[in-house]
Length: 253
Image (tube, one colour):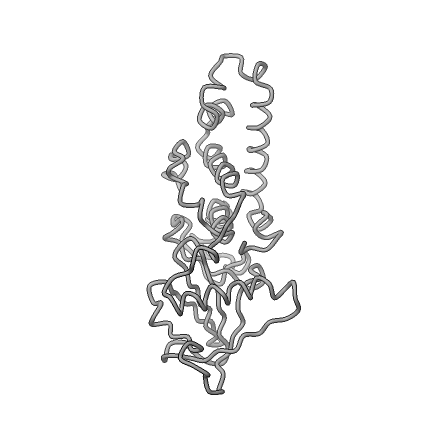
């Protein structure tokens, strides 16, 4: 992770996250989490302890990383089964070969398939029970429950339907995370901390010349407080990456 920490001064290095969904931010914090890094290296704990179905290399950030979150932490996972009924049209069928550039899969000990469909910004998660997507076009039925609990799954279904029909997800269904810029700044703060940067160095990089005066702590009280808040948040997220807003609220939007 040293290269990642060395790049904290470059806003461009993090710019891809401006269009990421909450799963992306969740992964960025998890891969900086020291217990996860140790578990990845030594496999002394199961990946499920960290909300994942399988370990992902913490050296891989978005869009290279393909973490597959468990449904216990991701409320948008679609629980699906092959349906024996006749499809009304070809548009009712899912053929993963048509979207093969976006897919990866983890098959568990019960032969359930856990699919991740992503371009590194948006993600769709689908758990397939009692069947496979590997054999060609499949008619699926999806299990939804309640109203509030169904909302993130309905959004995922809309994305999947658009992707299978058009080969892309239209702008109206892409993630729009209004706090992305703030979350990026918090990630940069964590990387600055891990590289040994001082509060004044962070202030100089994040807020330009405002922190360059020798007496910046006393003369720039509000600026000092802003950096301290960033540091507190970064420490909290490094210690408990599953406790961030991406898991306290819906992970997908």
